[in-house]
Image (cartoon, rainbow, N blue to C red; front, top):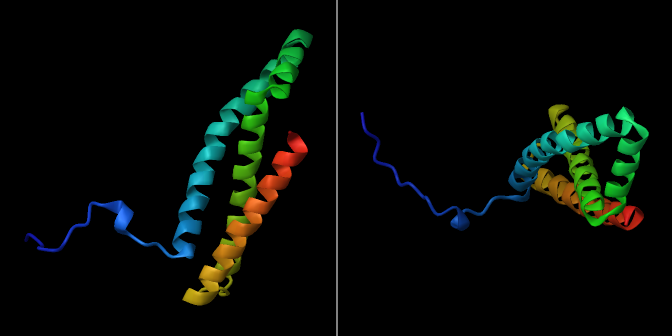
Length: 124
């Protein structure tokens, strides 16, 4: 049986509520943390291998690339924790309505932006 329903392939026309954006961002930061852990594990293993490896990692982390990776990793971790806490509260039965869900999503995203700026200022 073939269903005749409209298919919208232009994703730019879809208007997601804040709660939907927050949920997608939570998933994206989880994937970003997975890939960031590849760098973290490499840096950790290299720094523990020898004194030269440690100095190499220190030099890398003091450069632009290292700081960029560190800020990105901590930013993803920060949002993932905030989003996870928001989801835990929703699992307990709170913030499940449309208005409160969107408000909690906006607060989570706003707090994440502020904390990312603080992390960037501290690490730079």
